[in-house]
Length: 348
Image 1 (cartoon, rainbow, N blue to C red):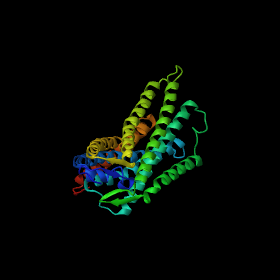
Image 2 (image 1 turned 135 degrees about the vertical axis):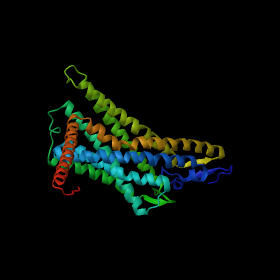
Image 3 (image 1 turned 180 degrees about the vertical axis):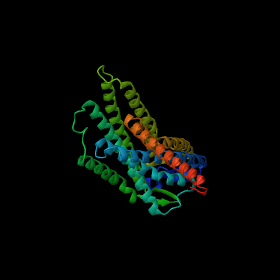
Image 4 (image 1 turned 120 degrees about the vertical axis):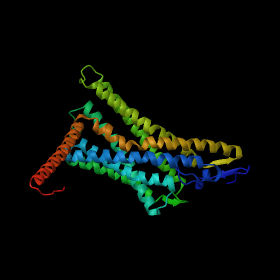
């Protein structure tokens, strides 16, 4: 591909991954974009990782200690927390890669991608099913689906993880290390990965808008419960957070996918314009990615801790920790007083 005033023709074999275009490095000045990603992405991901680990581990502990894990609702919440933890495990590697490039081996590249996509797709599928389950619970509370427990919950979770593993498994085949970057082997798999994410977002959006709009209409009826205002605010917040987080990311991904298709011959002016457009897309991609990937630490907040039951469990657990700490301190004080009165030295 020449850039000195002559035309060039690109094919799909010239591209590797939507995170890192070879043609940009060869023809466009990507130093500013790379520096932006190397500074902001690791800082933001570090915050997300800490919050996600704290929130999702806390969810798992509360469920295991206070709730019936055979319930379909609790099974969904538990698996969502596990899914978010899978997703979170990939973020430190991407943060490190943004700063120093991929210095690990190709096997690590494949495994990290595989685990990351398992978390990504399982989280999306679980959010769709949780929304549909909430819709059935409101619209038809006497349905058998609402009170499903036992083996049905296990079967549902097994299917969710099986589908997620199946969708993520091509990462073992079509991922490689190229020029110090963990990338897709060719543009065809890059396009497939992008459009898979776009389809998941579209399906999620349709389910969200349909289910929550129906729920809101039901809650606006005069016969609805008194707490409908709080519930409506929560639903509205869920929808806003979902679309603000995922819509820009998927739009930018789709726009970047257009550069992966074969391009017609172009002169230097067209190349310069492509570089400007590509640079704007890269900045937009980094920013939208930060919002989208933060869902793994927001899910515990909006899907669990806003509920009265889980807040009560959390308060009970914190009080239990407080009582245990105070009893330890009281025991230490009693031991210290006893040792002083007996004329002996005592240290805890």
